[in-house]
Image (cartoon, rainbow, N blue to C red; front, side, top):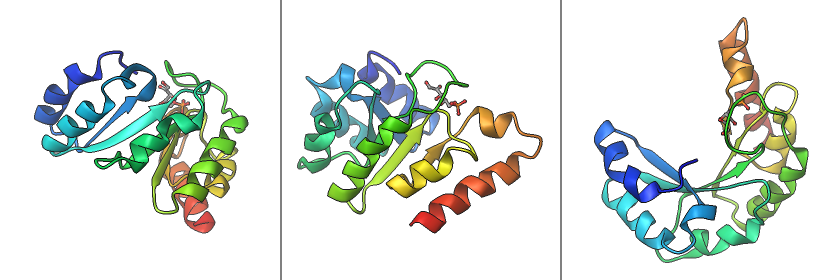
Length: 154
Ligand SMILES: O=C(CO)[C@@H](O)[C@H](O)COP(=O)(O)O
């Protein structure tokens, strides 16, 4: 999470990023300008929300004239890897999936073979996984388990 996402649009575009996800908590006043700039620079805009942020706060960003294309539901407090998955966050995922059937819904934090089914069955279709993949003896096998769970749920 950065507190000044506007400052990162240009550097990330120049570095070749295809997507740019920012936190709603820091961009409430200027998210539309931010989305415009992200799109103008050829990247796909997404919005992230912290565990304590109500899901309703991103509805207007998904429904706006120039909307975000992905919502990232944080399933840990942003900051570092290796934290415990928060199952309560699945209510947000379920609400988003019901309201926006074709939206990309991402989850980040504590995802691995033991938690993926909760996220996938709630409606998440983009998975961020750190420790479970990089700490595995067979990373490809873990990725395959995560992918399969999402495919089956869809
Ligand atoms: O960095 C964060 C949160 O800011 C982590 O959520 C990683 O993005 C994923 O790490 P694991 O939870 O999978 O170890």
